[in-house]
Length: 119
Length: 114
Image 1: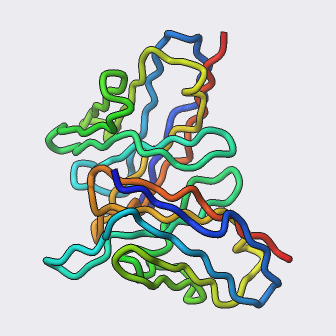
Image 2 (image 1 turned 180 degrees about the horizontal axis):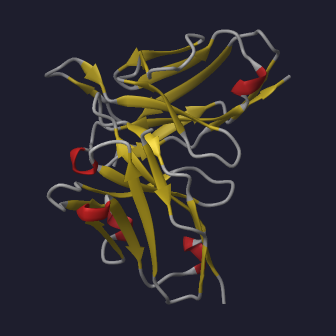
């Protein structure tokens, strides 16, 4: 079935970087844009950016410009989100999500990856 | 940025009763060239990722029960659960994708059983 499977939980120190992976299966990876959304505990959803897996083109929310990098490896149908200069406020669950082919809404979501930033 | 607001923050409804959630955008998300509202609704249960319920403001995603319906246009939208079931306890988010790829979500509305 169509799914996105993310890498496991991470614990990082302030100032470090984290790289989360998102492996697609059940569909043609290069045909659908991938977005990244994060959610701090008990908080709402915050869009971080998007990537076109075919071209590699990306777009980032202004808040994360300069700190986030989204890449992909088409040979293994996997998208990546790397966030650098981590601070405690980056502690959150990070989701990848596929854009629907009927609209730009997000129809398939990964299970989420908990990233904890703590000294 | 388009700012999304939702009301109420939370509500409690008896089983079988109607639940209504409102969403407002800071500017119109109706795209005049195709007459479509760039608005989606998601359901998120504890410990799970969000699930797409409604897109284009009123189109139900495949497999979503027909007790869920979306309405509205321009800047004001509503998600209605016509007959609340126990499995509908969740937080509901609206999202605008008018400014795609830059999207924004509402703050969420928590729905509980009274």
